[in-house]
Amino acid sequence: MVTTLQGNSLASRHKTHATHARDIGWGMIGGLLGMLVVDLLLMGALFAVGLSPLICFSTVGNTVARFFSLLGMDTIGGAPMGVATHYLVGPALGAIFGAAMAHVDAFRAGTLKKHVVLAVLYGEIVSQPLFAMMPLLLKMSASEALVWFVGSLTMHFIWGIVLGVFVSHGLR
Image 1 (tube, rainbow, N blue to C red):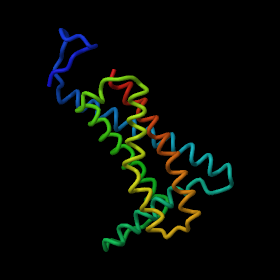
Image 2: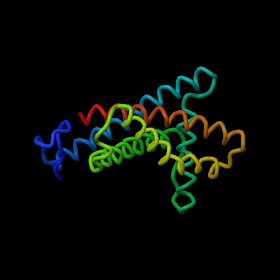
Image 3: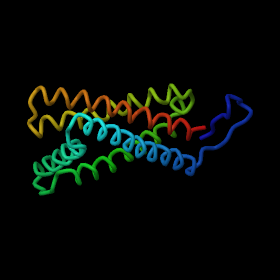
Image 4: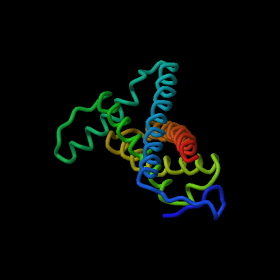
């Protein structure tokens, strides 16, 4: 695949597998950094209001354990499962975003603002099934589910910003 450099049709280069791998790597690292930022902010906010800083990890871990139990697999939930899930899913979703940015020329070209908007939209859209699973599987009340959705939307918005900034930097 041939692309132009800096909008000049006379200057072109071939995209190599190394280029795609690099973009996927930027996405993976951006997803990891996004999770770190989100988790630090979330743990700080939870601590500030007098809740356990690990409650979010426990909720995620318990949801994963409940999901696997529906499939007939016994797993242990709690904070360790939640941490593992966060730090597997975040970078994986970041890598997918990086791959999309590598393969779709319309996504590659653009400003930092465009990349951040794309990453935020991506993060919010792909996380919706995950948001919905928790209240359903953990049988949350309506008020608990509302708090969960608002908090999750906010945190994934931040994740998308970090991912978009990082991937945009990598695309230069």
